[in-house]
Length: 75
Image (cartoon, rainbow, N blue to C red; front, side, top):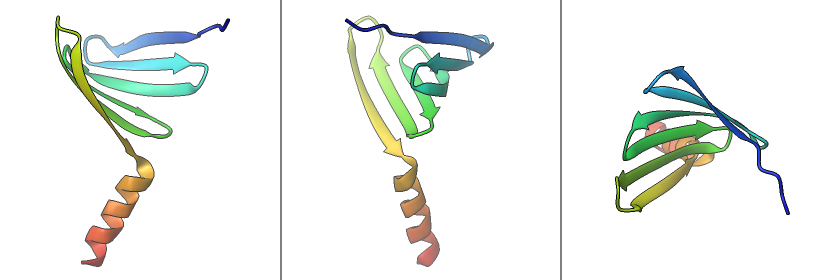
């Protein structure tokens, strides 16, 4: 058995939320079917087809972003 703690607070209603959980804080923006969430580990992108339960998500770590920026600067 486990206890889950999660709270979502609207900062700008309908546009930006602050998410608080046991693991830390994150910010989420987007509309139905499209969301971008940033936390201490990286950025998560999610696209979904509302009403179907179908969706796809992708996670980009800050390390990967830093490596990409560094490689572009060195070219």
